[in-house]
Length: 204
Length: 204
DNA sequence: AAATATTTTTACCACGTGGTAAAAATATTT
DNA sequence: AAATATTTTTACCACGTGGTAAAAATATTT
Image 1 (cartoon, each protein chain N blue to C red):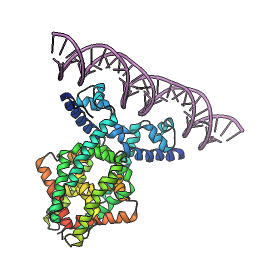
Image 2: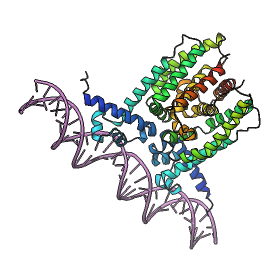
Image 3: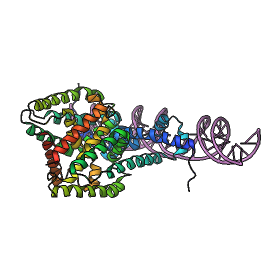
Image 4: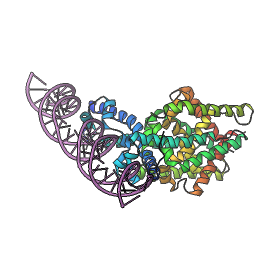
């Protein structure tokens, strides 16, 4: 049984988690050093290691935090409405995630690029199940003639790809357009265009 | 003036470039070690350093090779046909790139994730120019009533995002579906679905 | 205020990593 | 075949990096 965390622990563990997220997002697990995280968190390396006993521990905590947010986002997709409502709502949620957890999305990206050594099992279980459920719903829409006959799994990948692109490639997008999802107008315009194209692309 | 490269040089430099592409794709510049590349290239580290004088040199060569392929792909987009032909052709080219230069695409992704320290200038110049030309063409289509009134830049990002997703997140896609773009059937199905949704999404 | 628990700093260390120098081995040219 | 140029190996080294031990400083509890 865990002793409850002190005031200082709560503050400093969060500092490490936040700094870790930023650094891992840029350099991945291998490319990140504890010193970089400690610097950004404003503490010495031994001090940081008092809170997390290894680099891997920080990484696991960062991944877990991000993953929870992401899976929650995936599961919140309500299948009760029409295809139009459901897809619009799903794209909304994913854009929100890319805006509010941009660095987390990028940590996730580096993990996949590295071959998903930590997440592979989880992707093959929990996420696969979720995707399976979603494809069944979409297949139902096709059968009921509510949407065009498209391959469900590629529609899902499309939505993931586009929404995550704004987080994962934000450096490129900022260089090209001078803007990021943090700009309210840009955010709305991106979401509107993407939603419009996908809806018109699948609805009959 | 350069002395012409020997037979052995040509072979070994290519070996290093290929190995470097694979390793940088997984771990990015910082996370990659010369030893890893040397191992995969099947030579000792000092031997490798006889061909490229530093890790950065290998990285630059890998980036340049990939970038050339990518820019060529971007520029080959022929604006002579109808929007349908042009977009179909562009998606085709991008999918081909994701299939045939998957690791290169991922090296590119790690560079952007790291904040594009090497490519930033180039992105802000050459690529920006290309994107500017493309948006002008798309704007023309909108004005001529050939496609729906969508924001050109986000259509371009969409196409990039989706096509690159199959290369950059191939580890995830393989875990979820058991397939990659190397599988002919999967490749065709992915391209078909994406093309269909985007065309129906933008055409009137 | 004293006793105790928590947090932070100082001083390390072993191993990994980028890179070099020079000798040995191998290819190529004459 | 001998001379020369290229390639590979051996033996290093300085610095970076993950992590530890223990003392000092600070917070918290009694």
